[in-house]
Length: 433
Image 1 (cartoon, rainbow, N blue to C red):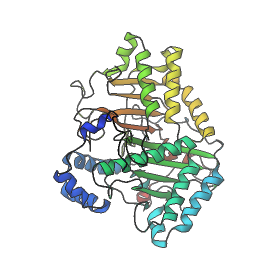
Image 2: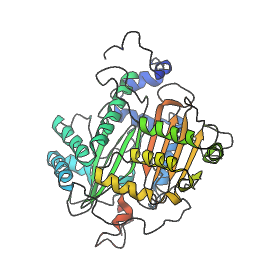
Image 3: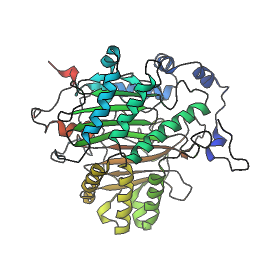
Image 4: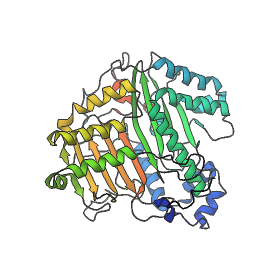
């Protein structure tokens, strides 16, 4: 790695670099991703995330329903329409990947559209679901890896692709910081395709791309696209050294969220702030956990009930509503421009049933959590304590963000039942008679 600028103030995260002589890191340094995951699954360490993983496996047994505010799915929120996706370009890129897969790789990579494996993405560094191809593995050629990245590039907006690549590079930077590049690197991500007949301009299909701090689930039907659920995070959120020095993500989501909260009247701030402390004694049991901390809609939470909290956006001043729009637009930045515009318009139409809530302080230096939630979208932003860095309290250099489409919208599920020939809905493979 290149050295830092002489005389420059150290990045805030540098005072929290871990002791790499600890057994956690000396052992991790000797393992590849598969050995690391096997040791975790069999050894039960660390216990807090091992227990969470066991809980995830129980949640996975539930049939998909979708995130709701009260346990009841609202129908009629989503419809089939032409969103202007350049589907030919996306299909061409995906088929290029298929053409490069060996027979053995195809068996691991291409699944039925309704296969339950679509729901087995997760954001920790542990390889808990080894489906598809993993881009850092020896059997994945440079050509195949490049072809897979071109699928992301074709499916996402230019700024969305840049954000995804930056998240991957930051993951590689973290792997170097903790001396474990075999477990965490720029390409330690899995890619799987869904749709038995492969990528198509006329039939439904999709892909999952997931790994540490970046998980994207994309569904396509003709010129329509659903990118949900997705997860993007960073620890740290800035590369301060090396060839990608200066890479940083999630700045708009962070700054605009704080600007929104600070712009509100004291009375409205008090209503929006559902907890004053990031780990508040007033929180009910389960409202905070060591891995997800404050956010509610992460991995394996496909059916979570998330009650509305905070203030209604339509009741906020116009300037505040404009900031909500700016935040949502930033969360939608992965989407191609025509899809993004349609989705943003849809979200704005529900401002009368959109809630904004906040946890933590809202001074310039305070870490915080916020959520924007309506019948058609949920976005969450959360500052975290250290997982690899050793800050015991939440800090602004460790961020988790995610997006869900509630009421059955995730994975394009709500749209699937509208597709001709699929009116009876879907069944997971394991439920087929």
